[in-house]
Image (tube, rainbow, N blue to C red; front, side, top):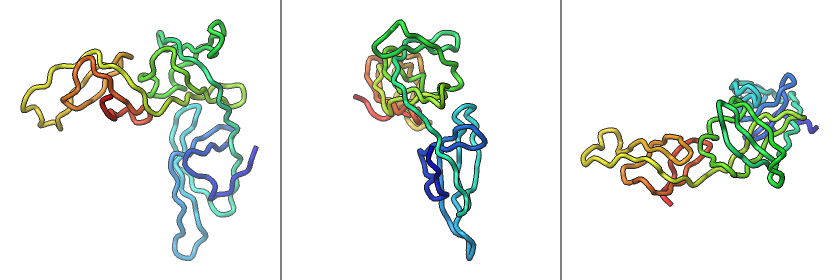
Length: 188
């Protein structure tokens, strides 16, 4: 386990605070007048999902979290349980509760390979592909002149997720979606 100095705590790094793993979402190193530099961070607890602000001073040191990645194949979900298996062994199945997975799972199709994030022996999250391609299964026709709300409409994707897209997207189109932000990117 490596020890990080205050200036090494940057975005996308994992640290341990009070025995729990945190992901650094945002950081800003600054110096106020004649004081010592500080690193103001926004941390997300990888187990509970809670977000908190924390400031690290020049003398602070924090242990880096040992987050291991384990490849898994997403199978299906039912009643809030998400089932995965080993990529080469479908009989090695296990379930994960929804709260540790995040919102991006609604854009993942069955049989997609994802990375499970492990802290010790515990699964604490899933790293998804940044962009996925999904087929539009339901789309209301565009109404001419209906651009007062920015020219967007709501569509249903093949995974069952709903998404706000531009008016020119029709049923049967394949679109690219950013799983981190949940936004429409482009038509494929």
